[in-house]
Length: 69
Image 1 (cartoon, one colour):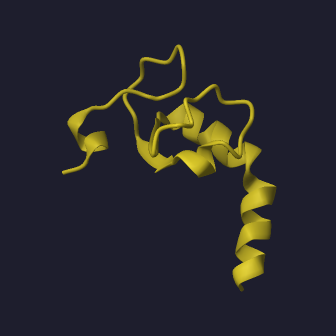
Image 2 (cartoon, rainbow, N blue to C red):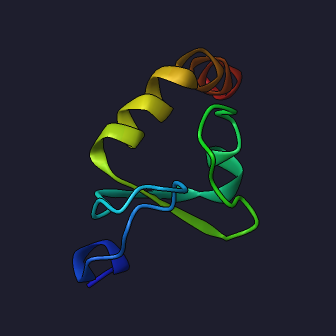
């Protein structure tokens, strides 16, 4: 049972929603629009902030995958 299942809150400043996903701190820093403490190893995001992160980093993530493929 992970921290998300236990009910950890979203790591974005000012957000009190329960987290739905966790990503690494380095991946979270790819999106400059989210105000997240990236010094943490894991960052927890609620559903709306996770969607915002996905949209903001879509091109970067595609380029990263292309490098491995």
